[in-house]
Picture 1 (cartoon, rainbow, N blue to C red):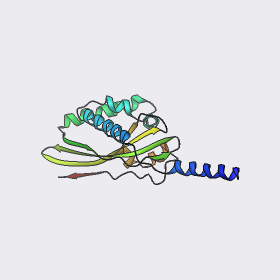
Picture 2 (cartoon, one colour):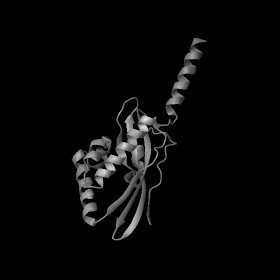
Picture 3 (cartoon, helix red, strand yellow):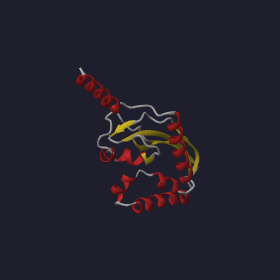
Picture 4 (cartoon, rainbow, N blue to C red):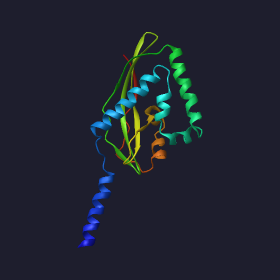
Length: 175
């Protein structure tokens, strides 16, 4: 009987670990605040907040170190400012459920940016991927555009990611 009870408890523990869970109110506030701060500063040409909160294993996929990631990010921010793109509005939506990925948890944080370029208004609907080590605090992030263009990145970085974890679509539309 004791072995059956232990096996039953283990089964419950294993199945609970694989089930997506909602974020707590505090986690929602933290994740939305992080994303808003990163994008607000980026839209002013400041990439420091993004670099501080980037999920570090991405460096191995872009040249092996932080510098290989920092340089193109900084250039993109400068080019955006020099091109005359104006951000009119930026919104952060409600994060998805949290999905298990081995010793990490991930969720998708939807974003909508309204911008103007050469007199034309556009809306970019995208997302950030939020990642943290299970049981610890502090989220790290990846931009959704790269994941959308290269979906294999999710499997490379998170081979045990819950199969139900599907990134939201990314789209750009003229208004």
